[in-house]
Image (cartoon, rainbow, N blue to C red; front, side):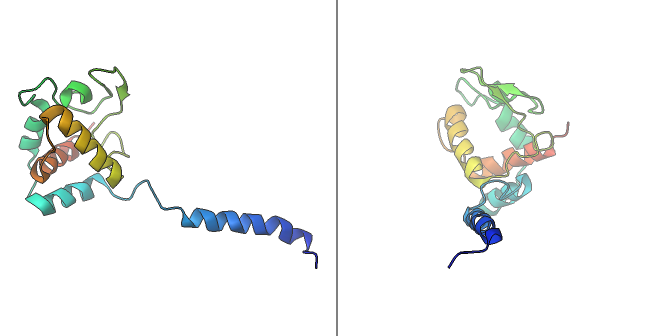
Length: 137
């Protein structure tokens, strides 16, 4: 039995839609505010002043967060060793910042190790997020 012509064209399109619906969402599964709430639920309230101090201090090592992200981080920065341009860190300036939990966790792990030579605590992350969310253009 031969299918009508319109079905030959319709079935691949339906299959493609079905495939797209099964792909897990990667982007925008969260927001900066939700990240702050996540870290606060593990530690307590984030404090802007502590977050600003964490961001700007070197903590006994070569780099601070500001070394690559600028102080305040409302403009594009540049990686201290590679020279690679880094988009502004403040969510008010760069709307897609902190909208993917997996990326947030990855970059906190990597950057805390670069700056603190250890993982950041939930309290440090809450303070850091409180500071970043407080920034405006």
